[in-house]
Image (cartoon, rainbow, N blue to C red; front, top):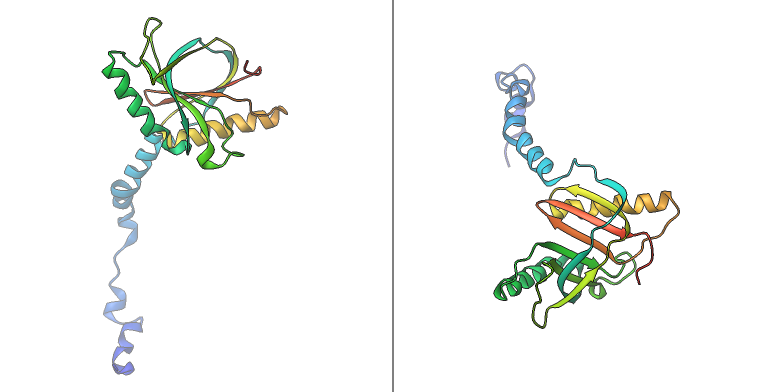
Length: 195
């Protein structure tokens, strides 16, 4: 065991060791430049500081190829990439991602969530089985738009939509339509009940 008396000089304020401090004031700019600024830049790029826009509008009519999906909504992307590959093998150019959320994730068990996972397609395209095709007519919707990374934007978009619905005494109507293209997420909730 070391002698406690031998270490007393480390605690004494008048010693040379105690007075040799690295001035932190001079290091803050380097810390901000090297660590904080890049982290903030990535967070900004991902959309952490972006505020979603909300508007009442008429949606476009959509023609889309899709597959039915049941499971956690967090795994929709994997299935969507597989569908994109199948469409390309059939010579069909996907025009943009589209997902119809059929169940409310707040009240549905995670593994039981249903969705239509698909891609917008041109009017003349007819994919082969097991890929299905449907048309979604133009309709009045509440539309939320936000730019950023999907890890952040989905929560912010639905948070904005749910806050608006609560303020206006409305409830969530399904299916919601999600489109994600060029880092822009658009969520549309129909104002009238789906047929």
